[in-house]
Length: 422
Image (cartoon, rainbow, N blue to C red):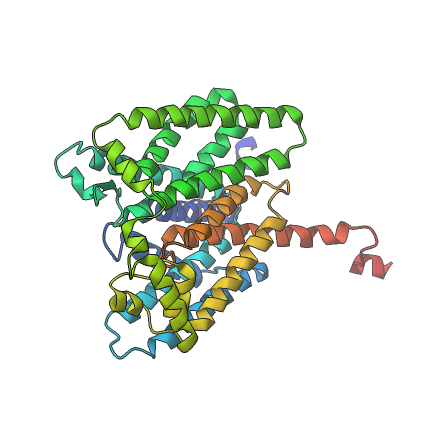
């Protein structure tokens, strides 16, 4: 009799099974995000199928996350209008299909995390595993650790399982920031366990020799530390944050000094450490193209078509704002600008509130700020992790919206049907 009484009803068992399967499916997608050697990558194929299946079986988009969907779709409509300005479409329809898919992936991650907040922890842990794996490949490629390892490098820089070291490096920033958060806030006994994957990821960032990734990780780490300092009223915790920050900076400085003694590393580092490269300041270099491009935007309000700018000047825009104007027109530019402003503002309002999902929001938010800052010098409209960050932040925005709605009936003086009936 007692054994029967402890049995779960079939409905609860099925619900638990569905939750496990759905969580596992999301984790697999995150694991695949670190392997984009060729396109379409396994991540795109898998996530497209997962989003379609989820949509068929009840993907719920929160009212609070609706602006994310509207603004991303509007941005892509701008790209479709811009495509009409082209004489030769070539691969443009495929490019815009990828843009639209990435937009839906952001909405997907926002929806599933808002519905199931426990997914945050699984997503971040899976991201760390993926980042460690692709970092090890990049490091092995840089040092030619085994035959054929050079396939994980490009331009003599670590690229991991990515096509470009300038995407590989920024991809590693969020998991690195998350591990840093766990070290700063967790028990001392866990620090050695967390330090190993953090060392691997930061090494991947370093050997990518991406100036943007270096700066992005540094800015995100400073923002994280500042937010933790402001969030806590405990003097002991603030002292711990200061001490841990000093210790981390000291260890980082020592590690860089040791790494720079390796053959070839010092020369590459000194070349990449300059703020300006020859391709930035040349007659038609990156900075000159900015001026030309913004002048063209005044003459072509619908844009000139996706990827056309690169064909005209031999190099892409390397600026997300110019990219929007050229590839998505003024409609896409305004939509993206509004989305970025809305995300930063809405995320900042809830950034330091004591919620179960707040640590994940904090890490995703500071990494998002870093990505947007980096977007001033590189195109980020097709970065998969950028849309994941958007989804994670907007998922927290939707959760806070629901949390506040649940609190409303409990507020003093609130009007409810039950009170009215009395």
